[in-house]
Image (cartoon, rainbow, N blue to C red; front, side):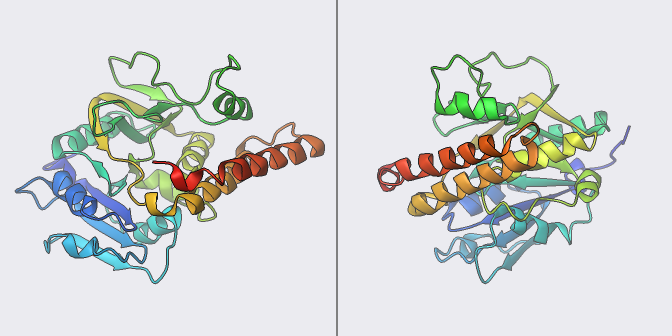
Length: 287
């Protein structure tokens, strides 16, 4: 078992991929570090934001900002930051996500206690105090996609937040992608995030590949994370929706293609395209 000495946050680098997150970015960093701490180190990959969100960041030691000339996407942005991470753990956190230092230290302790685990997270709540869909979830299968689209099918979907939370930390299939503490050794082993996922499903793809490589994923229900959700995507709802459908298709081809006949594959692709087209006229009006 790995044992840490001194401040556990010194063994963590936080990576935030930012795109027009407004004041949330600075708030994320402020909460992560607390008022008096200069830990953990923070790397912000800014995907060509135009809203001045980076300028709101405090000019403090240990905060590095790298500005991209275009929107790299989430996974590619994280991978860029990972090249200069020298700590044992990396916290991948959304800019509209809030976690306090004591909660992050608890996640470090959980990975220290479980060397077989590559990743850990806590329960994720919205700003009204409701646990978010995806806070506790399964890895995606074709059957679960159908259950999500057809909620009255009677099949279990991906979301587990309708079930009572565990009382103690436990191994799970997947956690929320909004806030993930990850062991760098495991990330190096599988090559980081798949950059072909521009946005959405890159987190589930990462978890599926970690588990396929023999690593475990854990959830600590005592750790509470707040997540506003959708801050960067509200002004580009159509593009985000289309990207989500493209990423779903890539995920299914990578992880759910066993036993998939050519006809079935064609029908699934047509269904995903059809679902996107049906939602297209309504997406600009969604809140």
